[in-house]
Length: 206
Image 1 (cartoon, helix red, strand yellow):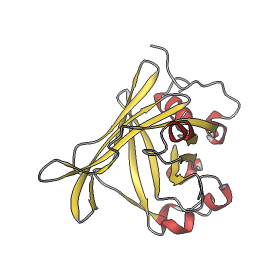
Image 2: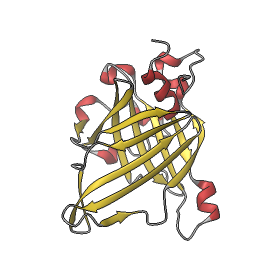
Image 3: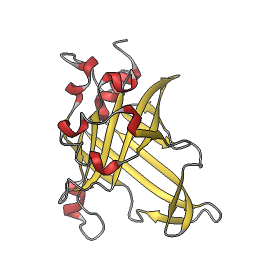
Image 4: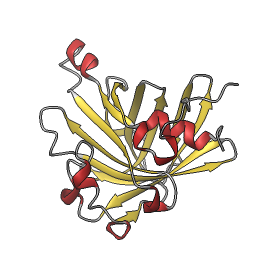
């Protein structure tokens, strides 16, 4: 169990990430954004889970994206089930306020089918993609499917999310200036119950 892909991946993921450097160098194309991946209590899923929120740095109490994630280890890869929040506004700020996070219960979420992410370790990074092309999102009056590509290391999160028209496969929304590049400001790995007082790393040596 000490070498489990699940635990090593979770340690990398747990944290407060910021793209402040990217926003400072290229403010016309990139806003300053924070992403929080905060571990949930072990008994929430009976395993490893996370609450996440994405917000502008100037308004941490008004996230524009929130989610719940259950991590499952499957044949040398990490499968992340994604869930939405029924009343997401009630939990805004949970990424940086554990008192709010403690009010979240399993009956408050619902599964987002076809929107899971699959991650595989490749050297010193984890590379992830959304499964298939059936994660549907309506945006700008059009039905789109999500294409999501992520690279995660011990200290960085690089992501590119795009919405593609289900008929023409042309991009409808998402960055046209390349991926968002985040650096970890704070690690939350010590909040993972199985990691307390441990020396687990973010990668299993090849």
